[in-house]
Image 1 (cartoon, helix red, strand yellow):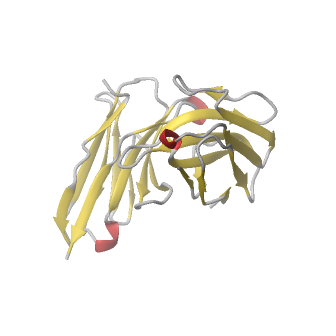
Image 2 (cartoon, chains in turn brown, cyan; image 1 turned 90 degrees about the horizontal axis):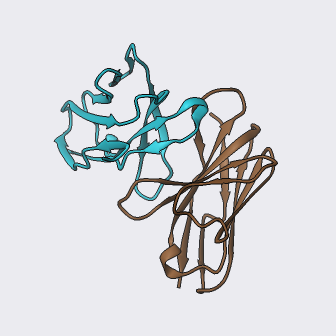
Length: 116
Length: 110
């Protein structure tokens, strides 16, 4: 199957700093990528839909100025958590949708963010 | 009402048992349906797609009932390695507006 990578796999940072997470589709082009957040023992919650070359679409309740998304190429989307706070500590997972009309999303391995 | 609802479990079953999970969804316009498996602290992985005609993959059978707006997953002859959280996933058209259920936890014991 298609492979999606994320970097870093885990990060610990101080409160107030910004953290950038990369999501790459390694063997296919992804016109659409999704960013999810998962708190312990909860399901994945869609944060935003990222389309190559255009602005991301954020879900209700997700602050676009805090979670900056850039999808500059067909294989890379980045999520920057700005001025991170302890409540932003979570598991962030991206997924990519191949631009072939299918509905299966391929998930990255996730990034565990801990804000001290 | 949640858009996608699942029984959180946990389901504790012995090896070899048959176990079934249900999932209901609220949007009748939903287009595609999946079951994903998620192991602890890992990303979800696609288990199988769910079609109106039903589909089977080895010990796993998935079914969709559009009239009642639910999907099901049946696992036969449970293995220890089946222990995981099973996520029901519902998509709008073109893969957009993906909604994940909260997951059903399964523990298979020897």
